[in-house]
Image (cartoon, rainbow, N blue to C red; front, side, top):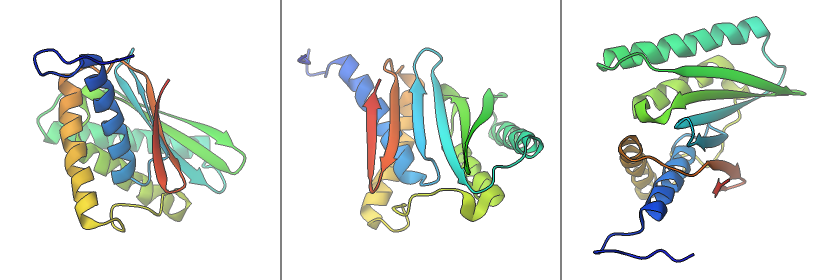
Length: 181
């Protein structure tokens, strides 16, 4: 299907898809601890998946960690003048691996919150947290700076414009792939 420009403006559907693709790709590039990112347009929800290797944590441990995540995010937003936000955490266990899913409304997500979430996962799970070796620290400084700035812009844009397509981004060796589903 072709996208037509009207009065010099790109097709809005393509623009929204582009925003979603850029947002998800930048999230994965800037945060190597995040294994996959899913966007659900129905609920305007973003799901961040973290993978933990080794013996899975107990149910009680994960309940405590989920409370810590929620309290930390609520405190972060309170300190930055925001209202309480919705956050949900659940997990799937697959043998010696656990996938932890953090669900949030994209419209209230802030960059500092992402820094906080990934730091809490690193502190809790250490080397058991699966992280991509191609992180912003080992990438060319110009590229990592560009991705960081792009992520900030895409978070701002995604809060103003609705992304209508369901999307998923994942890692494949040294690549980041984003699909609309």
